[in-house]
Picture (cartoon, rainbow, N blue to C red):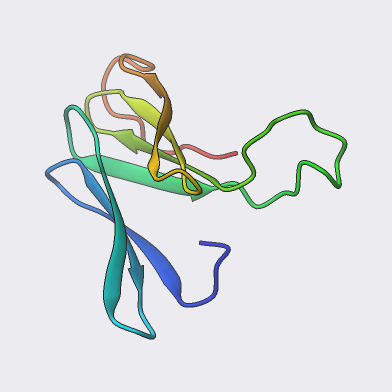
Length: 96
């Protein structure tokens, strides 16, 4: 994650957990509809600095073994987009 002391953990049950390793606390959790989490990526650019019109700066995407890709809004703590069958089979990497 771009935040210091924060890691993302993808689980076989489809959950993605954001964990502060310095404080040893879980502070955010997301859940895919199906499959095991296979990849997690964070948006690390600044849309204002690059003249982009996207409104959400703190984003994370994750993918699953069933081909689902989800984009999560970390400011709001919820899913903002999902591609349920983005790939036929497992998505091995997602990135911004």
